[in-house]
Amino acid sequence: MATIREVVDALSRGPGVDAVVVVGRDGLPIQSHARNGVDPENVAALLPSVINSMTQLGEAAGRGEFGTGVLEFGGGVAVVSVLNADALLVVLVQPSTNVGGLLYDLRRHRSAIAGLL
Image (cartoon, rainbow, N blue to C red):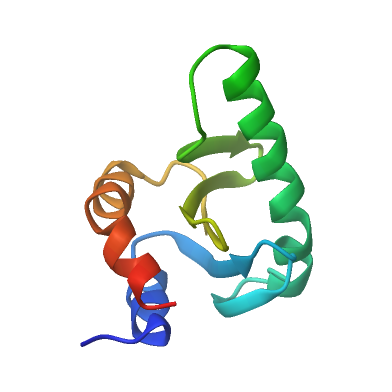
């Protein structure tokens, strides 16, 4: 069986991936792999508030619980996902990277990844 470190390392080898950070709801990194100047501790600290805001948006819009989102910035894309009640995931990719395969893999393997925590 794979470990969370192996999953993070595998995700980080995807095309255009700059960082993969698994984050506790307390904002502390559980496991990470980052390059190109990404600070995983800073990203981890900010992610819970982003997820909380997305959850509030889903509730206000009548869309239910937040699961996964794609946030586009001038310098790239952040794919954020709730793994379970205690853990979150963010994958930062470079601009113009196709995240379709990543989204499919996260949807398909989310519960398996969460089970490793």
